Amino acid sequence: MESIDAEGQFSKTPTFLNGDGTQDGASYTSNLGGMTGESKRVWRFARQDGDREATRYLSAAAQFDVRYAEAVVRRVVNEQFRALAPSYGADVAAVTRWAVDSVRRRARRDIYLAIILIAGIVLAWLCRSRPLISVVSLAAAFLVAWVIVSLEQWVRIHQVIVKKMSPEAFDPTDAPESTYQWIRERIDSVPERRRGNLVVFRGERAFVGSGRRLSKEHIVIDVSHGRKAKGGKTQQPKPFTNIDVHRALISAMRKIGFADVWVEERLFVNGRHIKGSKDFLPHGETAPPAASVSLELMREAALHPTPDARVYVCVEMPGWQGQLVVTLFVRAVHAGGLLYLEWEYYVLPPVRPEFLAINNLHGASPSNQLYRSCSWGTRKGAPALVKAPFAVLNDLWRIFDAKRRSARWENVIRQGQGFDYGAVRSIREDACGTSRLHYFLARDEIMYVLMSQQVLEREIRDFLRKHDVALSEFDEQIGEIAKSTHKYYNIHIGNVSESTFAVGDKAQAKKGNTNRRDR
Image (tube, rainbow, N blue to C red):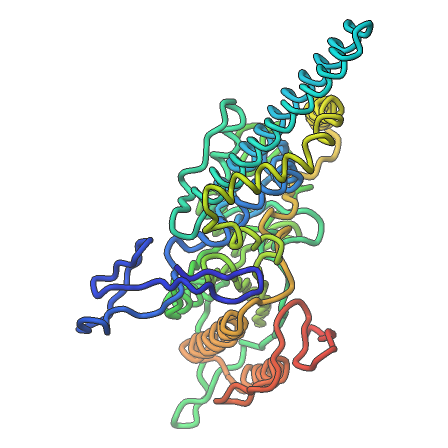
């Protein structure tokens, strides 16, 4: 199966699709027409399950980097009052389950090592009158530590990552469940954030979870002037609302033709201003905010936006199994004979190169696996044994500190003091790299932006024309935006330049220059 390796290239093992749409090693649905024989087998980057590849990388990272696993647990499990960021581009629940499993395995190892170290020291002290026995006791402790550290590494790398997280074998639903009910309940609430229609944010991060901003545009149109009919008579503009504009955009974007595109309205609310609202806190003020609100509340917020809550049409365009997610946010405000439109593009680029290291772990023989694990134990066994008591104390302190912080925040909430329920960055955002890893992936990013913006502009123009609004003002502003967009991505109309192109946060189509002024 094809995947991206540590150098950003395709691996040499292809994904073969048969005529019925199945593939060797994974399921895939495709219509290849009437091809026969060898013509049925084509090279193709697998796209099944939407965010499977990014989920695989993050789940594996939680295994070989325990500090990352601890950060995931702290971000998802220990945040008992704040909202969770929308999980664009990865199955956060699956990653969190693997992270909890990783942290628990390491904690169990440290407990065993601490017991062995203490037992070895005590035995050596009791036998201090017999130096040989004392030395043997300490040597035995280090030998057992070597075995434990090697075994834990072998399980972590070769039994979990290699066997369960290869491109062919990885299944997000195979993540282990926690033995604690409250952890299971917290993780089970994560998928609701993926398709919930409510986003509770902090500060200026309204589009939390969506990555880095690519561009921002806005226009204002006087919709009180009617367009001229064929006979030269000026038409009376037909009335419409914000909801009408949003519905037109949703309908158009759902027909855009991208695979797995997701289009819906979402309500974005400042986390400091939901206290006392049963719509946003249905389970009380000491529980996390809801994942969704009623359609009536959505309609009211769309018709009458406030400084703290407003509705956007969200267009999520994923690709490369979660390695690329471009999201468009659009909002319309019709008031006083004017129509205000704003839209922003955000991108979740591929994960950092160090997260791709798992691609180099597969294919080792059993003897090589044993050698690697023993070598790891030789290098890390003694330091891990010496540090084990401190590691156990540190784990206990983290548990105590998490409970202490939760109790403090609960007390703050009950006393009526200000508390921000807004979500912090998602674990997928934390894993973002800066490189696009592959030429076609970078081109897809440009394609998503340019094609969706073209659909957006065309649909707004058709909507205004159907409502007999004069189009000259709209055409003039859109023309300027189109020029800026094409210059930004260094393309010629009808032809993509083969020189340089710009992707990323405030990038510009000029090498070495990363400054682009938002319109």
